[in-house]
Amino acid sequence: MDFFVPSASSPAQAESVFSSIANHVAAPAQAQRIFKLEWEHEGSICDCEIGKPLPSVFRTDEVILTIFDCGDVYKICTPNRGAINFDPIYAVKSAVVNIEYFN
Image (cartoon, rainbow, N blue to C red):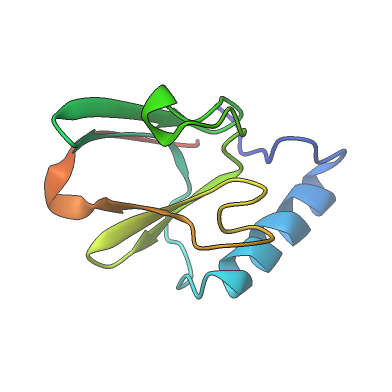
């Protein structure tokens, strides 16, 4: 899968949005960009994929915009959780069961 950010109208805009969100959540430079992340959260496996809604456990249907590797945690960002308001969703690295990267 080629890198994209939902709603970005061009690769340049996708890069700009990605950088802006990374800055907002204090994410370090990313060696690889994450497309999909699966981790155990409160006894269930959560499946987060760029462009798809958050898992139902988070009680919102916001679309996932970016996922950042931030050391011991991954930061999952939606328009309200990380991109504009509030904190992103955190997935502890030790709970991750699968990760897929963009090409």
